[in-house]
Length: 261
Image (cartoon, rainbow, N blue to C red; front, side, top):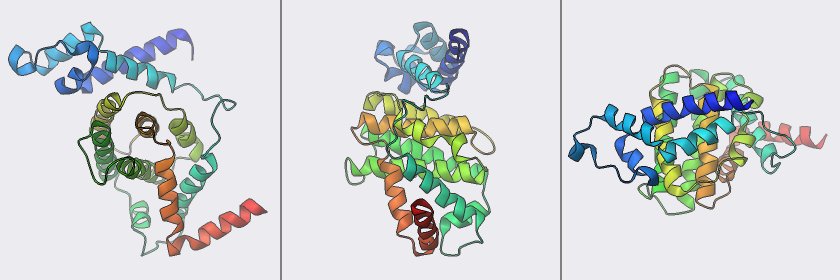
């Protein structure tokens, strides 16, 4: 991507991010910490957004640069190889449930055989919110790292299921690049960006587009790195769950035979 195009994309992303951020999320940005509250200042939400644009909100600006940078084609020579095979196998397992006759015991198969794009959007947005809550310390089950792995696995699950339902190929989703090349940010930044992304996903129509699905996986990777957890821990958990399903035994046996041939 050329410098001019990169600059345009970054600018558009910045405007989009500031439009989606609430006043509370903006106040999480250190560069905007001096802003008085909307209630005390009397500013409307739109005015606060314009005010943050003039200040160049550091949180939105860093996110725009990060996401614009990830829109370039990944360099295969520098892409970490760890976990790529497992991610591909996990994606194939969901495709198997989509393509084979309906398996009554599988809830995922039922979802894939009659996908509801609006409902899938809502589920992905909910899990992005919960992963953000783990990073912020406001969403708790058993504590770290278990909570982060659980919510990361849920975001990956709904991202993969949505992608398979929309008939995207593994190459179009690029999960290994998105997860393993995530930008390193703080837990607070990860939480704020996760809420912004959830708002964008929830507010759209139809199937979540590939760009937003990739952004969801990048968010998983960034949040896990912020919490010192391997970015592929969530999908690894999902794969272990899939391997334990009796109705998936034939698929994994065939995959093993194919790999050893």
